[in-house]
Image (tube, rainbow, N blue to C red; front, side):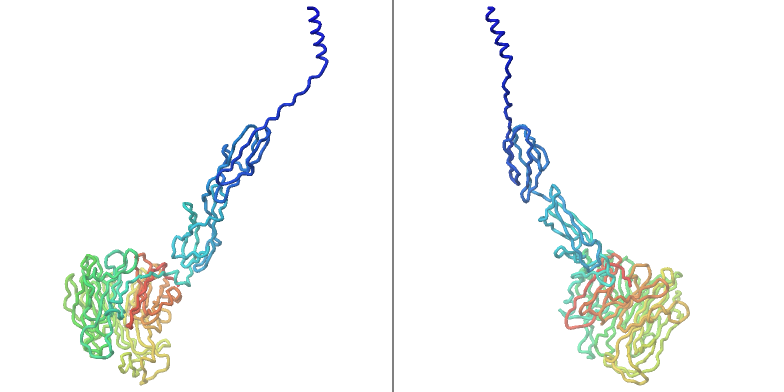
Length: 633
């Protein structure tokens, strides 16, 4: 026993005297598996790595895809992985979609008619540019311009929005197109098919004269409609003919699209409306039967190319409302050669219709006739003005209920009479005679040669003519109206003396406006530039507010001319300035020779119709332009 213990101790001592061998830790490694999947690739497929190794993996989307994250929830790219366990990871790809679109312009403001470039860029879910993504580009209003090769080519002024769209993603930018006041498109835009084709109105395709068109709201919708009266000249000239003149009245009504439709049948119950076999020379709009709808009275005659003059007479015609948007025509009164009409309420509250009769060349009945209308019928006429040939009449009622009249003569260089009606009849207050200097032998447009008066005035030589149309207007909203009268005649540029011989072919037409106040003075008011003279053929004058400043302006409507109106703008200080910028009106319009302001859409800005007033062998379509801005010089 003692031997065994001693041996154990000895062995233990011997063992403690030597070092133990070192054993290395085993290498620990893990597997990283990276799969790319659909839509992209990765920089490494992974592998086996010692524990703690850092691996950088980059995910790259294919074209048309975007990287959206890793399967471990990380969105980092590249992704740093510390390998400390076996790991499978894969990137996530989605098809790229446009999430944002940016549009831009080279210029944010241009003058109408100019161009500017636009650019665009689409961005995906990660706000990465998508240069291959092309948007659909559109404009808020095609009126303002058009798109051409990433350019906006402007045409009209206004605030234009340019839209870009890719699927449901939309961006927009605004282009401020400034007006060019030397471009008529600032003021007007053409309306395609703004008036209907009326070629069948005048004897199956032929063209008629149309010198008298009536602006009237036929259906009380606040928009102006148009009654156009056509008549066909009797051919050949100066051949005897005793029957009625071919004529048709057409009702054009403004529809919801602000174009005029032919509603003659709906308005009159027939497509054939004949005004007493006559040619309308002037008209007056008034609510005759006080039903809230406006009516019209036409002054007519049959001066249509037939031999002068015994067969030129016809009755007057009233177009009267039935109170429901439909109308009827009624002929009334004696036959005569009528050229103008006026309607007003007299001092007794009766509606009085005054029509001027020019029964020339006999000089036996050159009077003004007055008719009363009681709401259903016309009274026999009474003569209120004698020996004045019915050139023009106009009236207004002052604040004291006194009706003022201006009566003019269309005798060669005739005169003007100013009347007032206090309830007991007309009382002449003053008169004006332009007079003449001498006479020549003049052959007129009908081939008739007669002694004709000549007047030299303001450097112009006036031959024949007379006063044709008149209006009252206010120089300012609170002033008493003044009277304005239009004279039309012929003009000769050379020297003339007593007894000279001249023909119509050697002269041009000329127009002048006179103005007078309501005082007893017969002196002309110098309110028009160049004394209101134009070497043009003017048919009518009209008072309206062309620039919406609350002041009366004056318009001359030339005919058998290029069609542009002559506009006098009230300068608000007691006189007028002529609108000399001819660029405010549409240009290069073929075959039109007259025009007419009208408010088709009821917006208070004047629209304009251009048409051909004279007879030709083919029909010429009238044109409508919608007003965009009030006129300015």
